[in-house]
Image (cartoon, rainbow, N blue to C red; front, side, top):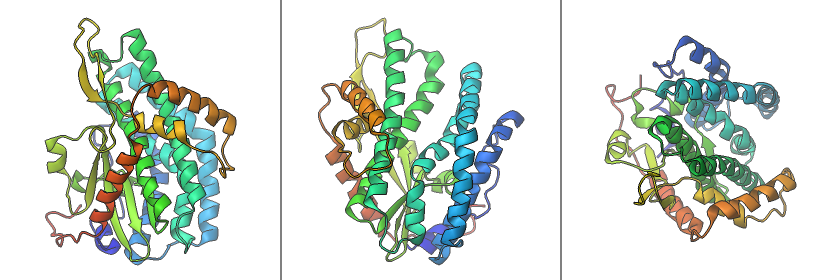
Length: 344
């Protein structure tokens, strides 16, 4: 759909993000949300006008500041949020990690913002491959944590349901990003960006997206929502004119038969995010990727092979399914929004 039409479904100035957070949780999110708003302002204006609202020099200056904030404060902030979540074990506390995950992904994909706003030739392949490699490495850490908890017999305990849901969601977003970025590898005219707060956390939620796909040459845009396993309710809740749902279970092949109860021998087929990350990292070639710590990546590649085990390769099929869906949906034209539907 036309990018201007797409952006009109989203308010440039976001409202309150999560009404269930307490004052301490809101305090932790204050600076991260300010940065997310900054990216949202830029994206909203770019989609609305086709022109970057900031110069390349202004953007670089702001991104240096963003990088300093991320390096200095983000790890500590994420650690505080994780400790808070594990201590209270409530949906609200774990939702903090979901909000912060935008920055984990965004920091990795930062070069793609510059490519989208200022590079007439589209996104650079090296930037795409580096982002895919780093995100898959992040995924390995979550998979390793999952395996450790399984060995201890705690992963499927009911008391860890909140952690299991949030960590699976984060891991599934990494997998989805890797598959989406494969579209940019084949067609640099199509940019994939993580969705800032204006596009991800608004009410009503029928337009909420985790990623935004943009075809730059004819100014088309589309929201993408990642789910570890889609339900009938998910398909009902999101507006198909604006948002494409990517199902990690069916579209990405992230499923595995496991014992979910250590007291019983019965096995169940469950969503198992991370398989796409592990497969990508197992087979990725590092030639031409100058900005990576190859020693660390090679260590992660070894772990990825172990975690992947005997799982049959599925990434090519997953990438093709995602690409076909997103490219088709980019061409869709939406019915005009009316005031009762448009976000407030």
